[in-house]
Amino acid sequence: MLKYLSVMALASAVAMPALAFEPNRPVEFVVTSGPGGGTDTFARTVQSIIAKHKLMDAPVVVTNKGGGSGAEGFVYAAGYKGDPYKLTFGTNNEYLLPSVAAVPYKAEDLTPVAAMALDEFLIWVNGKSDFSDAASFVQRAKAKPGSIQFGGSQSKDTDQILVSSLAEAVGTEFRYIPFKSGGEAATQLAGGHIDANVNNPNENRGQWQAGMVKPLCVFRPERFPESQPVYDGKGWHDIQTCKEAGIPLENYRMPRTVWLPAGAGEDVVAFYRDVLQKVSKMPEWQEYLEKTSQTDQFLVSDEFRGYVQKDKEAVTKVLEHEGWLIK
Image (cartoon, rainbow, N blue to C red; front, top):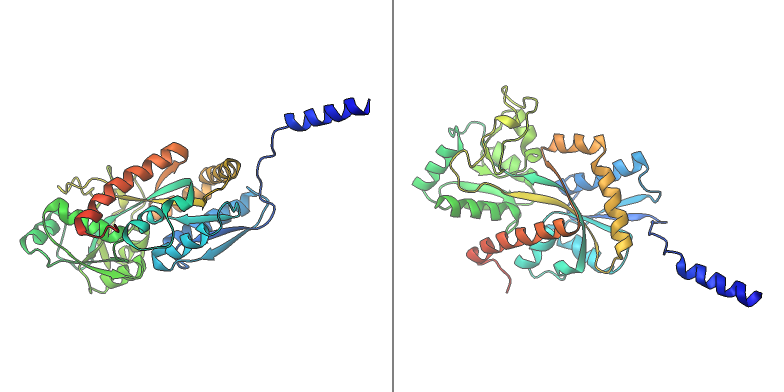
């Protein structure tokens, strides 16, 4: 009888599915930017929604590691292989940085969990500039190659890659001045110290509201959705797409991404993917997207990996052209 019970217990144990992962101690959100940056706002918005709606029992601790254009955060997280308590927030910098800098991690050292939104890019000029539209801006740039000075966040990063792509698309040259952040590039443009930047909507919103800068066009397939006016009766929908302005560069966007260290189990990835998907359905997330004028796009699994591959291929062409690619 005892032998029979032992066999039955063993059979039951084998038949029982493994318990799904659920964190039982604090989860660290590793932010690959400094406090107040776009990635920091992204991570803290997710944190606040999780806490408010009790989407998981474990508390969340946010750590900023933004050195080296975010490399500090990715190196830190990559060092915790298989750790299910390190969730890293970034952009496409996770897989682009190893292509342009000798960083001590590889893109494969992190596991993709989700892309939660797409950040848009615009051409902005000073509010007092005599440029009235993107066509006249390009015309001036082509007439005097190298005369227009763009400012942007970091070097050989998303902003400079876009400026290089723009120069290639319209057949001219621009000068590029790297700053520490998009916020600094916005301040420099508002003060008239540079001619243009390609900031995200949220980075220049305040200066546009004050009339200190003005948008010329946005690098997205269609215009922004209808929204409330921002300045002088004009809102985001009133901004031309760059394609409408005759610029043969239709689409340039930056994903807001979330990663786990390599070696994290499928159950761990599934748990955080499901939590993040719930976050994306909450009204506070929609308010965040509307406030920052980001495009709602939730990508996971093969769809996310496909986006990464396509983005890497497009950017690699620019890096090769500029001679920035690490061999």
